[in-house]
Image (cartoon, rainbow over all chains, first blue to last red; front, side):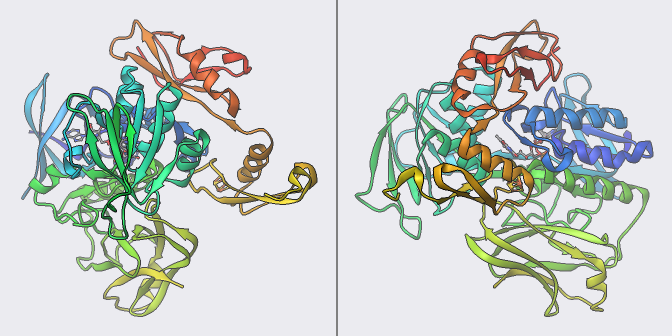
Length: 421
Length: 129
Ligand SMILES: Cc1cc2nc3c(=O)[nH]c(=O)nc-3n(C[C@H](O)[C@H](O)[C@H](O)COP(=O)(O)OP(=O)(O)OC[C@H]3O[C@@H](n4cnc5c(N)ncnc54)[C@H](O)[C@@H]3O)c2cc1C
Ligand code: SF4
C-alpha cells in the first residue's frame, strides 16, 4: 500500500492550501486527490473578481486565485492525483487510509499519517424546496447556470426570476443581464439578503434589479418549460401571505438557496457532524472526532470568502502534518458554545494547553443586529470582545481567542461566544 | 429631494464595493455637487471609491471567450486590466462577444486591445493549452 504523511481529499482552494502547509518546505510527503481533471475546485467557474484581497493584497478573479494556489502546490512538491475519486476514508490502528478510483490505476488504497477532508460543498437542489407546481425544464441552480454560461458559453434563458439572494445568485443576476437576458427580480425568503452587501450593490442595484425581501416563489407554471412563476410575500414565520402573489412570465427560474457541505465521506468514516453547520465537529487543530482526520474549507462550514478558506486550510495542513509527525494534544478540550444571537461557531472545541497564541473562531449570527459586541466569556470573565456596527447572517464573523488570557483564568470549563450591547 | 436640487449641500450614503467588508461610506456633497468630505470608510480605497462613484463611476468587467485549438478547455476567462466607465460595461461585453482566443493561452495574455474604445486592454485570467 502506498503511503504518505498527509493525504488531502479534494483539490480546491482548501485542499491546495492544506497541502502546501503540510509539505512544510519538503519535510513531509503529501498527496492531493482530486476527482476533476484540473485543480482549483469551484473557483474555476467563478470568473468574476473579488478574491485574494486578504491573501495577496490584490483583487483577483476566481481562476487566477485558484491558479496561484495550484502553482504553489506544484512548487511545494506535493503529489497531485487528478481524475481520482475518493470513495472511502477509514481510520485503523495504523492511522487513516483512503480508497480511491481512477481510470489509470483502478481502485487503490492509500495509507496516511493524517487525512485532510477538503471536499467543498454543493448547492441545495430544487428537490429540497417545497415549491408547488410541475418540474419543467428551465429550473437551474445558480451554480449550474454559472457553469453553463462561463464554461460552456450557453445562456440558460432570456427572461429570468431568481429565488434566493445567495452570492452565486447575485453574481448570476449580473452575469445574465450582461449576456442579454432580463432578470425580473430576486426573491428572498428572509427579511435580509443572504449574500454580501457589495454583491447586492454591484450586481442588483447597478442594473436596477429589484431585491424582494420576505418573498418566495409560490408556484411554477409550464409543463415542458417554465412559462411563469408566482412570487408572494411571506409573513414573519416565512409562510406565504394569500392574495399577495404576483405572476412573472419567464422561461427560467434560478435557485440560490444555500450551500450544503459535502459530507457523505465524512459520515461514512464515522466523523461526528454538527446539525447547525452540517460539517464536522472539530477542535482547535481542525481535527474531527476521528483521530488523524482533519477538515477545512466549505466541507467544514460554508464560507463566503475564499481568503478565509485558505487561512483555515493552512492551519489544517500544519496540524495534520504535526499529527503525522506524532504530536498530540493535552487530551483535554473545552467546548466553544454559541451564545445569544450566535448560530454557529467553529471550532467547537479548544485544547487550551495546546492551542496557538491566537486562535480565530469563525461564526455566524442568527439575525440582523446593529451596534453590538461579539463577546467571548469563560467562567463569566470576558476573554475577547469585538465591536461591530452591523452583523448579518450572510457575512461570517470572527473572534480571536488569546491563549494567555485563557490560561490566566486557571481552569476553564467552556467558552461562550454571544452578542452583548 | 429638496426643491433646490444640485445647488444645495447633501449627504450621500454608499456601500463601498472595493472589498468584501462593504463599508457604509458617507459622502458630503457641497454646493454644485462638489465632494467636501468622505467618512465611514475603513481604508483609503473607500475614499477613492466614493469620490469616483459620485463623479465618474467605474467597474471592472469579467467574462469568458471561446478558445480555439485547446486540448481540454472550450473557453478562457478574461478581465479588463483596469476598471472602465460604468456606462461602458455593456459595450465591453458586446465587443467581447465577437472575440476568440487561440491556444496556448497564459494568464495575463492580452486577448483584446483597447476594448470598445475605452483604452483598456482585456487579458486572460485562466489558461488553455
Ligand atoms: C456553485 C458555487 C459557486 C461559488 N461561487 C463563489 C463566489 O463567487 N465567490 C466566493 O467567494 N465563493 C464562492 N463559492 C464558495 C466557494 O466554494 C469557496 O469560496 C471555495 O471555493 C471553497 O473551497 P473548497 O476547497 O472548500 O471547496 P471547492 O472549491 O468546492 O473544492 C472541493 C474540491 O474537492 C473535490 N472533491 C469533492 N469530493 C471529492 C472526492 N470524493 N474525491 C476527490 N475529490 C473530491 C471537488 O472536485 C473540488 O475540486 C461558490 C460555491 C459554489 C458551490
Ligand atoms: S473602505 Fe476599504 S475596507 Fe471598507 S469596503 Fe472599501 S475597500 Fe473595503
